[in-house]
Length: 293
Ligand code: ASP
Image (cartoon, rainbow, N blue to C red; front, top):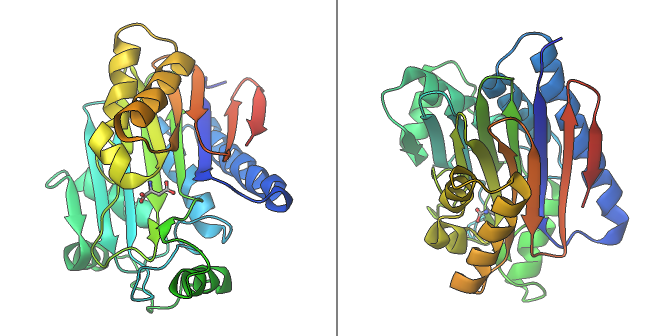
């Protein structure tokens, strides 16, 4: 049997109690999908991508279908995937609606010409590579509309939406990380968060580990949360300690909040968050399972 491990998150934030079980169940389904890919002989990169696709399809999460809306009421998507083998990276940002932005990021990684594409360029790349361009409202859920209305009416603050998704996978040889989000409710048009930026929201390096972050994107960008995790792992910290120190640094440096999931270079898991909730799930091809918020 192939050795392997997958950890996912469904976003740092404060999910109300009555919805927490559903968030955890969604994360657990994504882990199973990732492990299934590994069982079938797929790579860590394939498994991380698949786990994120499952969460992009789930309207509970702020990614793909169910993504939050910017101040103009539009969906603009950020997603990235990184292969710890050769530090290969592909990211799309402020991208118009497509069913699986993470798959477009993967196609960019495979092409190898550029690391990041934004907006119209990402859209043109996607269409040229056979992805279907969706109508402007195809990914918009009633809940996403209601959240933007609440912000516009002053009943809720504009802020990060919670429900961003990420996955880190290990296939016995390689580690990969993937993150996908609609960003922040009521964000300015063209705003790009941490998720598609290597070293901020997404990072993977074979033999060291991988990380996907969630939380206040501007703060995670400034703090270099992904780099912090990988530097700590490289210095010999456990996955749990690396995760905790990155979140401590995020808080002490910026006063802000977020969370990370981590696998070290041998697939051992860690996670940390200083928000009320961060749904997550973890599994291995040898039958270990764990999940929570
Ligand atoms: N980090 C994401 C962003 O700022 C949001 C989140 O994780 O909920 O775009």
